[in-house]
Length: 361
Image 1: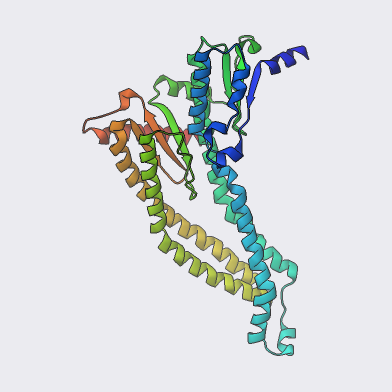
Image 2: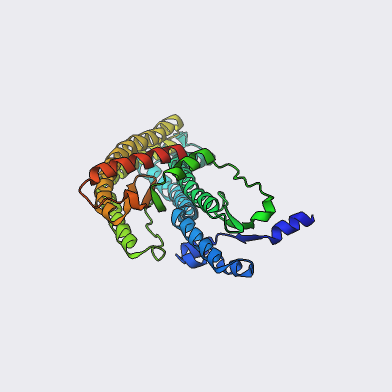
């Protein structure tokens, strides 16, 4: 028990504060005042720890995960409102106009309340599944780059007495004295082979990761002036892509609305199997259209990615734009090209990042 208490005494726990992150207060996301409680830390080591924490903040973001709950609540609330509208307004009006007499209404084999409820909510998971997959990919990429920051720091700073660890589940940070490990340091669930190979020929100093979502509420106080300019260009591109997809979404909503109404009519008329056919048709149509929109979106992002990267390579930055994540790499000096050979530099770095991200996912 004493050894465990010593371990706790030698450990600083920095928990991630999601509320401060949502308010874009990056200096308060971790309680940095805890670092000052350790009298054995030199000024140089404290500075090194703060630099490491900033790199972790740049490469991670819980905003995507934190905004998942409001989005799900909004989605479910919309479903509830539509269901109540269907039960208390649409059903009576439909029967009034198309089955005006009592005899006609009695002849209806109307589906039960529970069948209606099931139809409205049974497809929820299928609708949400793409977002769940995207969130998982974003989390894996962010966690990898954060772990890379930590492992590189621990390997290259043998003169310091403390090691830094990063929790992949909640993005918390731990500062632990080396003496607590008795010379044996391990990183559970970390692909050290891939990380060590990357560290041997690392092409960047740090990376800024943003989830590619429509909120665009990124903390821009933590980045410098040039990076703010790059982020501004990226947001304009994402907004432009949203505008280009607007016409497809109008077509999507028109078709889905028609199929939706037909499925509701079948519920009233007792044609449950036909109702299921319409509902599955909505899912299939949505996925097929989403696939084609995705291809157009990917091509658009690839074109803009190459343009932005070649524009900012002379300034030492490389940009990755894809459907899952936005990445801004601060390049190592050896990779900064101020000549006209930017196309070759772009292809080389892009292949390295693409291969790395594929391994991570």
